[in-house]
Image (cartoon, rainbow, N blue to C red; front, side, top):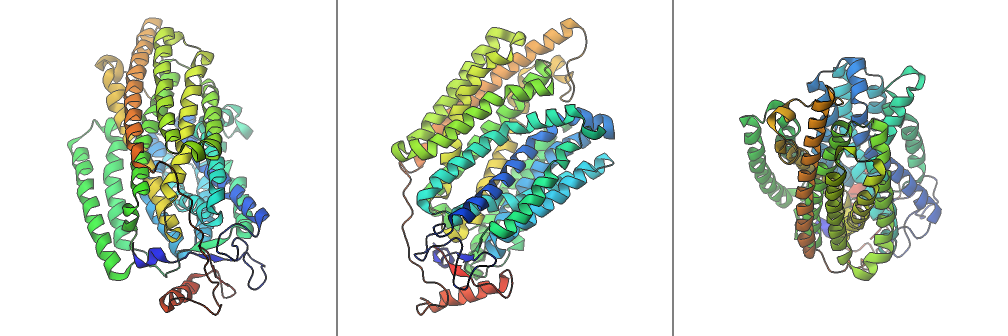
Length: 560
């Protein structure tokens, strides 16, 4: 472990705190024990921001037909409106996490939520496809500044014995946010508020963003790495290039016919990633300020958790996209009906996520995650049977059973996984680790989107597959509609078999996680200005950190 990974994190007192007081840190160095009300309000703020970002990922998909009509957007522009957000988000996540470590997680969260609000306004006011594409790219980049700080703030604000409860709440938010986007998008578009058609799906973020900005400034406690780190610009360029070379061809590959340059880019991304790792090792030896703290990969639970996160992202990417195509194109359902169909899934995820960390994981450990993988796989097999048995005439209520089983399985995985990945991460690298976790998850989702062309459209006949528009309902006569519907049912079943197989792989990889999550040891760390400042190098690091504080009146204190 590098020297800076042994340093305690720095936490600034809330505005208006008395000298020597600290709003989120106990005298013994354990965060979140002296101001219970403030930290729970801070949690509500960051959870709300996380929910809004989760919704924003999928809310635009439902409104695509309305955007096409209103702005005259081409298919290429639509691809960028939907995929550009994910592209910018994934490419900037690691950088966003590291900036939080350097300049303060509260500061970067506030910058991110401010930019997210402005970009939402620009998206809602877009006058042409080009403006909407640019606004969505900005929206993704600002979300990448905000999202890594959410888990980092939780990790540095709450003591180890309370983080299970907190991550349980985070799982509920994740479950609700995952499928709420299509439902909200369908409602806002169908209501056509003030004649604005699709625009309210973006404008609804404005009051939420303003409230989060105002309350966040007051209630969130600042924290950052203790050493005055520098932003690794070369590392930023290398990791961004590697991610773009991987994700861009996956995002545009099917539309462009999977050209040779796309495959070369994806292969080249591995070479650029290897160069990035070599440079990060050099950067660590040179000044101890890399973009990614490579010592994290010596933590077994972190490595295993990252692997599960990547594979689980593939599962989500494949399932969520083919599910939407199956319902809206294959079955010809309206966006509102498709959105309402996902409600049982969302509720099941939320319930299981809340129970898993608080009740099940403390007793059964990683077996809970493995049970979740097998439960979700069982739900997929149930869904395959239902889709084949009822065919294109399947009803919403006939999907409820498989979706509930799948949701329960997903809830048992997603929240304990977050806790397992970050449980042994040094607090001062929480932002960097959080950014890396989110980046890996987003990369997995992008890989899943790319695999949809193979496991979903690849299983259709050429005549049917080539004649289907991803952004329109089923047209033509009854015979053509029946043929396309049957093709979609078959492709949906084929895709779910692939997803079930990947979940079995996840079951095996989970064996790499610790059997039980070990509680973080208690540490007593002296407050800055006390008689015992410990190692002079540590004191110097804290003094350097003051240079990037919130102002001359800052009085940083130390937490574990």
